[in-house]
Image (cartoon, rainbow, N blue to C red; front, side, top):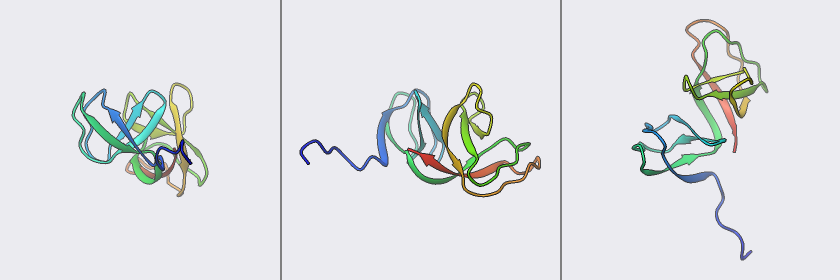
Length: 109
Protein backbone atom coordinates (compact mmCIF):
# COMPACT_ATOMS: atom_id res chain seq x y z
CA UNK A 1 0.00 0.00 0.00
CA UNK A 2 1.41 3.33 -0.94
CA UNK A 3 -0.29 5.08 2.01
CA UNK A 4 1.09 2.75 4.75
CA UNK A 5 3.23 4.61 7.31
CA UNK A 6 4.13 2.21 10.15
CA UNK A 7 2.72 -0.55 12.41
CA UNK A 8 1.68 2.07 14.97
CA UNK A 9 2.75 0.34 18.18
CA UNK A 10 5.46 2.97 18.83
CA UNK A 11 4.74 6.67 18.35
CA UNK A 12 7.32 9.46 18.34
CA UNK A 13 6.37 12.44 20.54
CA UNK A 14 7.87 15.67 21.76
CA UNK A 15 7.56 15.40 25.53
CA UNK A 16 5.64 18.10 27.39
CA UNK A 17 7.39 16.98 30.61
CA UNK A 18 10.30 14.73 31.57
CA UNK A 19 9.51 10.99 31.62
CA UNK A 20 11.50 7.97 32.77
CA UNK A 21 11.50 4.71 30.88
CA UNK A 22 8.31 2.84 31.78
CA UNK A 23 6.36 5.93 32.84
CA UNK A 24 2.83 6.49 31.61
CA UNK A 25 2.74 9.39 29.14
CA UNK A 26 -0.37 11.29 28.12
CA UNK A 27 -0.07 13.53 25.04
CA UNK A 28 -3.47 15.09 24.44
CA UNK A 29 -5.68 11.99 24.53
CA UNK A 30 -2.94 9.64 23.27
CA UNK A 31 -1.57 7.44 26.05
CA UNK A 32 1.53 5.29 25.95
CA UNK A 33 4.44 4.05 28.01
CA UNK A 34 7.84 5.72 27.61
CA UNK A 35 10.20 3.36 25.78
CA UNK A 36 13.19 5.18 27.28
CA UNK A 37 13.96 8.28 29.28
CA UNK A 38 12.60 11.42 27.58
CA UNK A 39 13.66 14.90 28.70
CA UNK A 40 11.16 17.76 28.79
CA UNK A 41 10.90 19.12 25.24
CA UNK A 42 12.88 16.21 23.77
CA UNK A 43 11.72 13.78 21.10
CA UNK A 44 11.14 10.22 22.30
CA UNK A 45 9.02 7.14 21.71
CA UNK A 46 6.03 5.79 23.56
CA UNK A 47 4.56 2.30 23.20
CA UNK A 48 0.81 2.66 22.63
CA UNK A 49 -0.20 -1.00 22.39
CA UNK A 50 0.61 -3.96 24.59
CA UNK A 51 0.14 -5.08 28.18
CA UNK A 52 1.91 -3.17 30.96
CA UNK A 53 2.12 -3.10 34.74
CA UNK A 54 1.29 0.47 35.75
CA UNK A 55 0.77 2.34 39.03
CA UNK A 56 -2.80 2.42 40.35
CA UNK A 57 -4.80 3.76 43.26
CA UNK A 58 -4.31 1.33 46.14
CA UNK A 59 -7.87 1.60 47.37
CA UNK A 60 -9.47 0.34 44.13
CA UNK A 61 -10.17 -3.27 43.26
CA UNK A 62 -10.00 -4.20 39.57
CA UNK A 63 -11.77 -7.00 37.74
CA UNK A 64 -10.66 -8.47 34.43
CA UNK A 65 -12.04 -6.33 31.63
CA UNK A 66 -12.66 -3.25 33.78
CA UNK A 67 -12.13 0.04 31.96
CA UNK A 68 -8.91 1.70 33.12
CA UNK A 69 -8.32 5.46 32.96
CA UNK A 70 -5.19 7.59 33.39
CA UNK A 71 -5.28 10.12 36.24
CA UNK A 72 -2.73 12.58 34.83
CA UNK A 73 -2.69 14.73 37.97
CA UNK A 74 -1.47 11.79 40.07
CA UNK A 75 0.31 9.83 37.28
CA UNK A 76 -1.57 6.60 37.99
CA UNK A 77 -4.39 4.41 36.76
CA UNK A 78 -7.90 4.45 38.10
CA UNK A 79 -11.31 3.00 37.29
CA UNK A 80 -12.86 6.44 37.81
CA UNK A 81 -13.86 7.92 34.45
CA UNK A 82 -14.66 11.47 35.54
CA UNK A 83 -11.81 13.83 34.68
CA UNK A 84 -9.56 11.04 33.42
CA UNK A 85 -8.56 9.56 30.03
CA UNK A 86 -9.54 6.02 29.00
CA UNK A 87 -6.33 4.06 28.29
CA UNK A 88 -7.33 0.39 28.24
CA UNK A 89 -8.69 -2.61 30.12
CA UNK A 90 -7.55 -4.44 33.26
CA UNK A 91 -6.26 -7.93 32.43
CA UNK A 92 -5.80 -9.26 35.97
CA UNK A 93 -7.82 -9.15 39.18
CA UNK A 94 -6.32 -6.72 41.69
CA UNK A 95 -7.50 -6.21 45.25
CA UNK A 96 -8.23 -2.95 47.03
CA UNK A 97 -5.57 -3.16 49.72
CA UNK A 98 -3.47 -0.08 50.42
CA UNK A 99 -0.35 -1.95 49.28
CA UNK A 100 -1.87 -3.05 45.95
CA UNK A 101 -0.58 -0.09 43.95
CA UNK A 102 0.08 -1.65 40.53
CA UNK A 103 -2.21 -3.23 37.99
CA UNK A 104 -1.86 -4.89 34.61
CA UNK A 105 -3.43 -3.00 31.71
CA UNK A 106 -3.88 -3.76 28.00
CA UNK A 107 -3.56 -0.42 26.27
CA UNK A 108 -6.20 0.65 23.76
CA UNK A 109 -3.65 2.03 21.32
